[in-house]
Image (cartoon, rainbow, N blue to C red; front, top):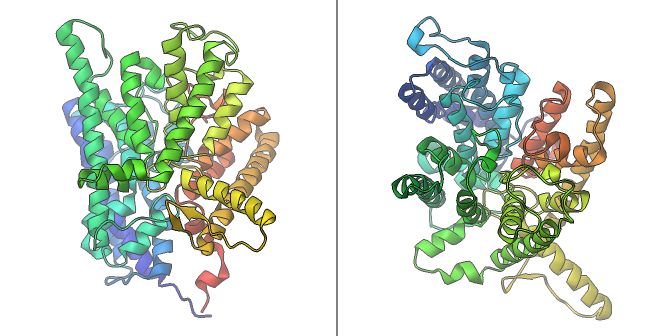
Length: 532
């Protein structure tokens, strides 16, 4: 049988991306130099990335990219980058390095749960897919160097807008066939071409992403500086390091934090500042391009954006009432009162709801202190997701909108069977093939969710830990939807460490499949993709 896929071309281009991964590794290297911590972890990883990437490029010196090769290249790239990105965790955790004999370049990290390759792969995949689930047993500068924790943050920022989209934007060899690559990787039913050339579109998206990230970093650190000037504790913990770290993971809807208690470690004003940036991260970035090009009305004319804001407002209002009236709390958490406090209940409800819907995964409080009604509301929110073309995960707002409009059409045509009524979105009739594709994606998403939950229970019966249905469902929903935290055992202040290696590998696959939105991975499993 003759293969219709030029796998050599795909592997070669994967090598190109892996080789260039050595460039962002310079950033944690500089952080290590500044704090006089070990930098050999990243020197070693850079050498490995260049050598492995160059070797893979030699498989096909002059690759040609088609649609089939694009699917394979994107799927392999995300796994390859996650493997290489996990090397710093293994190296630092095991105190192994090419340069460990030099005192100044020593690794300088304490005993780490990430020393195990499976845990390192889990953490790296969680980072690049912007999931935010962690297997770090102790998130602190005593256990991990500042350079390593900053790399953890940076992986999410790189994965947010998309590694392949970034590669298309800056590498000329990927500009040919870039449309297929971006369509396979971009979150949502499809990517909107903003400029005549796809590489220019990729650059436009990354410029908006970079600009909003920089704005958040300046605002967060500005609060810290302003508080010091005024002698008022506006943001005492928001150092420049923390501002950069959280700027990286907010716009990526990632949720990693160098603070063990996530955003709960910061003041109320910091939490309020982060909320609009999480909302922005869940918005289609193409809309920001239109705003920056003098068409701000496009943002509010977009039906998906209006539906998105409406969902956030309604769900936040319901959750605010539950917390304010104490109906949503099992017991009173540590810190300032929530029940009976209007500002506190609205802030925590809004922050957590926005964080979960956009799949950011930050926590302003431990929602394990909430009762089942509030937690099941949050579980439903995990399945919603951000807008198409955003950095958010899960099913996406536009798909839910199309499904609701389709249901409405079915009700109408049952009453008027002779009527021809297409599904419209923003005044434009959708092709029926696109509507069927959305149905297929949503059904497949739910099937994967249910099957993965069953597989997790089977693994738990064999290896433990003993968890209930809500915990298992939230763990699967969080990893498949790239959300991060779940409930109880995998709550926002806990981690995924108690699970067996086989369960963690299952979740690694779920994070990978979820970030690529199922089809680019599943199509590789069909014979029609490969055969002549």
